[in-house]
Image (cartoon, rainbow, N blue to C red; front, side, top):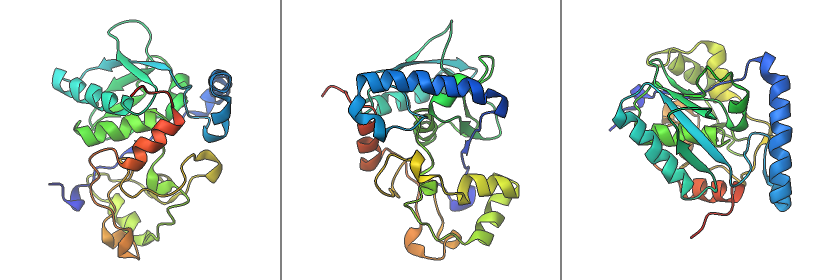
Length: 241
């Protein structure tokens, strides 16, 4: 069992501003493919989402055979519901470049990974990796945000408690990092879901002491929720029964 005192939080990596022009081109190309294939779904998809049916190649940089196996098992779980194929490659180009460097777990969001220089990782498992962590980080790679940053969540944060909590170990975040990764609400235009799913694998644990209403407390989510499965299937339709 995990203790709330031991929450090792994920960070959503942001693209360097110098990559912005390249990412705009990537987004335009990906949108052209998905609009051509699924014109009825264009309104549901954000600029971070892939074209349904896309194949994403994953290459590992370090990590034990067991650690890599957990990552691929998590990928297989997402692929049960998302019409996206994630395949492991040992040479040549790869969209997903997975490292296991200590100091935290993180991922870029969706198609942003195509704008990351090819000699740099796009996802890192510095915690674990265990199955919940791998599911969470790969969810980001598929374009999903942190669920607590969904504006529909309306979480009544105890802001001073949140800032103090994440400033301590094991995260040791400075003020702005906590604001960016916990307290900031994403633009509603970037979202495709229809509500807040407190059981989502994309949700952080939320101890009761970090909110002013204890009904918003969230435990450790360890598997894809029904909401996760439905959302990813809607974004990437076409999985065969």
